[in-house]
Amino acid sequence: MKKPIAILANWKSNKTIKEAEEWVKEVSNFQFPIFNFIRVILCPPFISLPTLKRLILKYKLPVKLGSQDVSPFENGPYTGEISARMLKDLADYVIIGHSERRKYFGETDKMVVQKVKLAVKYGLIPVVCISNLKQVDYLTKDEEVRTTSLLILYEPLFAIGSGQPDTPGNANKMAFKIKGVLGKETKVLYGGSINPKNVASFLSQPEVFGVGVGGASLDPQEFLKIIENALKI
Ligand code: PGA
Image (cartoon, rainbow, N blue to C red; front, side, top):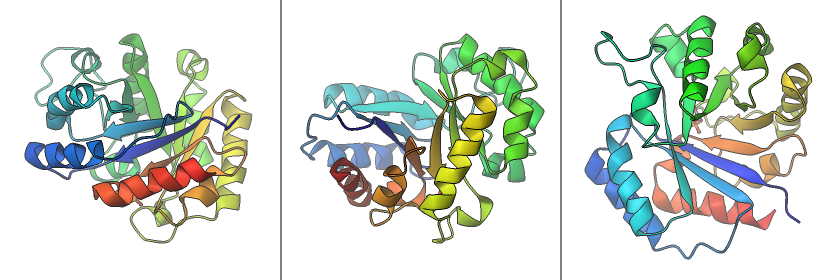
């Protein structure tokens, strides 16, 4: 039996609703083989979630939706924030603590923990992004977070958007260390300059459960090639 794997597409701040629709229409022409061992998670900007949810159902695509962020607060006077309660009908997953949010929007480890708790409260699966082990250690400070089954997306800063991925061997070692801290059942994904050519080398690492794909997920054909190559391992 093939090992289960996950491929997470993070569109970041790209694509209008119309462009998102076009992407999904193009992807729907692809004859997806029966693959219940690959989980494809598409994370568009918030505003495209309702449209994509409708189209995924319409085309019966084997794709789950995730958001790229969630508010650290419940509902209330927090202008501009999208809460976990608002998201639960639109997405199954939520990316939390991406390094771009930490760098450009001042997101702290403490906020990451608050977000994880609210995501779990409303039935969303958190995909927590980390770039070093200190960020993993911080997660263990909170009893509830420590005992939650998390998906961890390991993304070294130098590898994001640079065309210079980490080595598959290093990604495997880091996944092993993360599991050492958070528990063997933790699922660890690697992200940073994943493309159709290198995806298989990461997915074939024993400790690596999946990959996070940024830039290479924007073009539907390139993303489909990533899935096709993942299917071959
Ligand atoms: P990249 O982005 O694939 O464009 O390097 C990865 C990410 O930040 O999730």
